[in-house]
Length: 99
Image 1 (tube, rainbow, N blue to C red):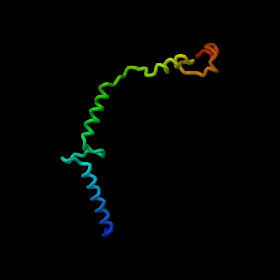
Image 2: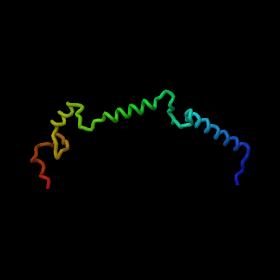
Image 3: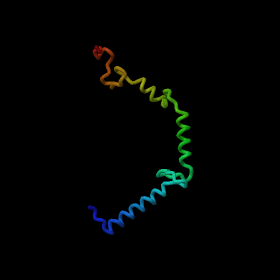
Image 4: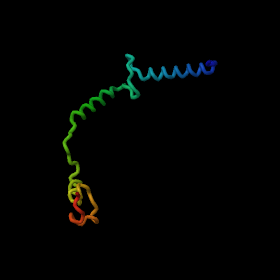
């Protein structure tokens, strides 16, 4: 059996009151839960509209952002599509054919 003394009952009451105060701080005027950030200045609407705009203007085509990187990559020696060091790259006949 649980022994409810006055001290533990007071602690539990304080804890419940704190939870209620926190919950009321998160709830809106009409009782809807807003979240931790709150919605005091209409920030959520701005964030959602920014997200929708970014989603609408997404580009899935390959875009080369830095032309210099592309030029340097084309100059580097490759073996089977991977970059290799220049010291070990002697030529195509230095490596046996893949069978």
